[in-house]
Image (cartoon, rainbow, N blue to C red):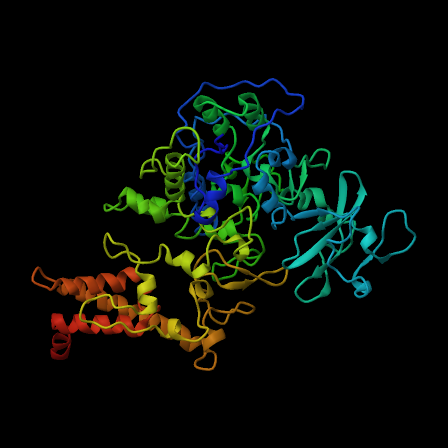
Length: 580
């Protein structure tokens, strides 16, 4: 029997797409749960997307918020209404999606909250030290004492950076304990959220629980699942499960349409943004109460903007944890689809790099053609139908990080170079070729870039995803995809000085970068103005190469300079300048 994947058509990136479109162990079962009445909408074509696009562009202050709101389209109309659906729990999901569930169980999402009431093994801290930092006045006790492992009801976090701990006052009332274990340093650190532990700042349910649980009910302080489980990202699964059960082991195409439309594919960056962001609701809550995958995040949540200096460095990089969505919203990745549509040279083939819909849809089509997926194949994504730019799942596999750290779908350099490289259709984003110094223009030899040729030299992520200090301690990789070029900012390392501090001062590095980019831009403009119909084609090719790289000489100044020298010689511009 063919196995059918119960997911509608959204984008998930290369390495983990096969997990989604090919699941040999997916089976259908009939649960014994009591069902509630369900109203079905009229059937509509499943080829239409069922999510909507958040490509917010974060500029400054209020302008960012307004722009984000303007660029969030209304929800598509062919989605089964899930607003009244109930959460069913990850155990129900795993009864069909076994392999995905097993991988997810050990992921950092799955381990975002761990119940230690019966098993203390997940606690990594050493309680033989740090007693002075762990002092707590527990309810009903006469004097303060250091909290111990037996006091811990839950571990917060998988322990990549640190572990925090929960004390259960009573059911539905938990408090974050006032010290955390620094996993990397192997030591206790104070967790000073307020002057006293009975302050509301330590209240778990109102401050933290939304992003560490699934199906949180704020009214009673309870939740469906510990950790970030299936329904955190795919939405409540009640209707999905009921439709699959009713269809039985051999759903027909019409049933498959409804089954796939009854669960969110979690391809919208807003799904990740509900927790990987900082902001507030209208009521001042630090998480988007009421948001469900498929809805509009901006309707219930306002992102922190760059004029809030307690959240941002002056460079435009976040200085608090969990602000990836805030930063991404400011990046060209977020606007890659809208910027493509503005180009008069845009074609559907460009979507391979400009939209996270395209590649996934192509793989769904291939899976149907190879009979690994049931039902009809979706229509290919087009410039008109594509929904998202370069989003979270273009780079990350949310289910597992077994092969690459940080849930990446490929090795980082290859991941960037997949798109930031030249295209057969014409010179476009040849950053890889410029950085490495490969031969590009006939008759002009390439120069291996100093950065690329250096032993243990920088990679794409070294500069474009710099490790930035955050206020709670430690560092996080920035998702602005911009180097830190703010020099001499107290507490903020720039992207250059750590490697070049013995060669130049921060002031001189800053001046050098400005001089290189200003000179390169001026030379490009001068050369462009001198090009005529009689100019050899290689001249335009060289100019397109230098300009298309996008760094204005910084990726490989020696090579860019040599190319522009050759252009100037061909156009006689050095003679012209000498005669002036």
